[in-house]
Length: 232
Image (cartoon, rainbow, N blue to C red; front, side, top):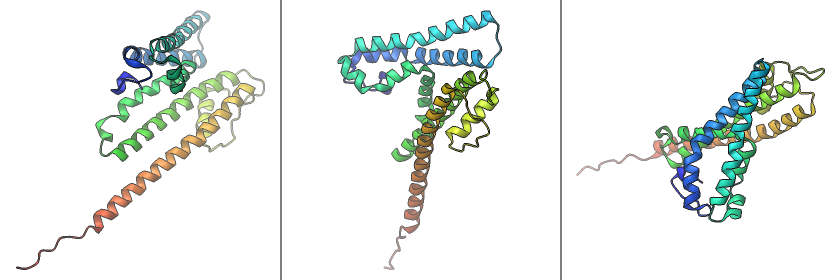
């Protein structure tokens, strides 16, 4: 929980909340820059000088995350308790590519989703899961393409093939027309399959719950007896 959520974390305290509020958007921008630089490095055919610049951008944009994390721990009211209770902060340090997911809060908290508490919660879940699935699919496609494109006997030799493979893998379809052959690629595939099962399961449950709620509301609305005036 950060200051941007409107509350102060009791384990982090006010000083840490102010720091988190100050660096929230800069860190999100750094994550987007990291993703863009990594994408160009993997997909585009750049010269040596451009590749060197991109590597510097990747290293610098990633380095700000561990620095910010260390500052957060130092400013926390109870450092170790805060670190244990906020594992996602460490995840953003290790995987800064996931930090743009925080932009989905703007959409999830818009007035479109504020009809009722249940509807708003389900809408936020759907927004976060859809955004996370899309971003993870893209990142997995980049990572697998980088690992597979120069491997002997590889059949994933273009980013289009890699993205198609990632899409059918995370949705648990698994056509089998493209398969990674490297150890790194297969490791990414395993993680993506496990994540896909969870994403599909939660999405299905959320949609089913919303449909059941809507049907129940319609049935209750139709069964409300109309008040009949008695003749005087």
